Amino acid sequence: MDALRRPAAAAVAAVLLALMVGELALKTPLPGEPASSWAAYAWAVVITAPIAVHRRWPEAAVLVAAAGVIGYSAGHFIAFPGYAAFALVFLVSLHAGRGRGALAFGALAVAVGVALSLQPAVTVTPSTWIATLLALAVAWLAGENLRIRQARMAALQEHARRLETDREDRARQAVAAERLRIARELHDVVAHAMSVIAVQAGVANHVIDSRPELARTALATVETNTRAALVEMRRLLGVLRQADDGSASLAPAPGLAGVPGLVEQFAEAGLAVEVAVTGEAEGVPEGVDLSAFRIVQEGLTNVLRHGGPRATLAIGFEPGVVRIAIGDEGRPVAAGKAAEPGHGLLGMRERVAVFGGTMTAAPRPGGGFDLVTSLPWAEGAA
Image 1 (tube, helix red, strand yellow):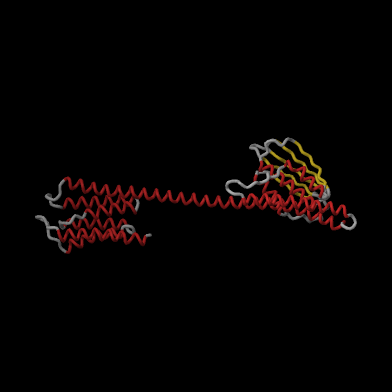
Image 2 (cartoon, rainbow, N blue to C red; image 1 turned 60 degrees about the vertical axis):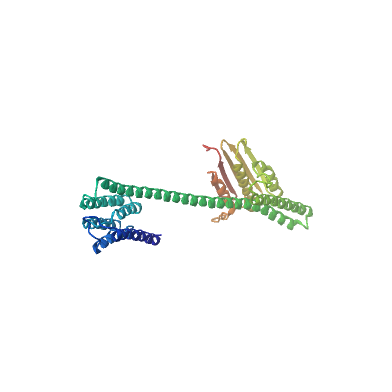
């Protein structure tokens, strides 16, 4: 940008120099005015050349031009030097800031005042003084006003750029959050279904010869859970494919009302769950309801994988809070050995963290596991 501005400033200086040179060459001197000489042309260069470098050296440009105006006027030459002074005041005020603009106005006002006082009384009248100084003031104020407008426009553009950057950042964060939510949902659906299928397939494989009726029951459970998992996955894919107009037909998201059916599925898979519910499920938001159901589903799936044949499930509805506790006797854990946290526990922690809740998950000393979570959903909930 500076490479483009320098030639523009040089062009302005060249045009003003050409005007002064043309006036010196063509205008007929009045009585008492000397003819144009090489000194007049040299002073014209001194007056106009600083305009070409006013961006890089504004103070020096102003002082050189002011000295040139005084020196030129001392020779009483016929060309008017004020146009270059007006242009320099305007450009310095526009490009060099308020302080330097004021310096340019003050220095050139003094220089022009001295120049006018050196001229013959016949060529300088009170109106000449007023018009010249007024033109300098107008040039200064015009440059200052335009500079402020440009600075304001640049600030608005920068603000708009920052807003656009913030919008893009929020969009990326929303996409990442949505991908994480979908990953949690897919994990909960697939992990639950695959755990039940793996257990029941193992049962069917062991008893298919000795107890074919039990093998058929196990295979029926595998079929039921496979179909249920496919329905859930189709629902999630439907969310991804849903048009902006909301035309996709989706099944309602599961909630705590579906816990009895979930317990029946685990019973068919060989896990007996003792359920205790306290309080009334009133006013629980849909997001909390879904997260609570997924926590119950993942907790019981972990019991089916790693725990014993029995589990306890306690769901408590308190003002503004849903509490869930899952426990099992499990299998004894070897001393110094603890189960590594998997994606299931991480997913549950993420669900709880979304609502600012708490979660504890720890093995029992004698074997088994306890999972306790709280999901607050009302302001001021414990």
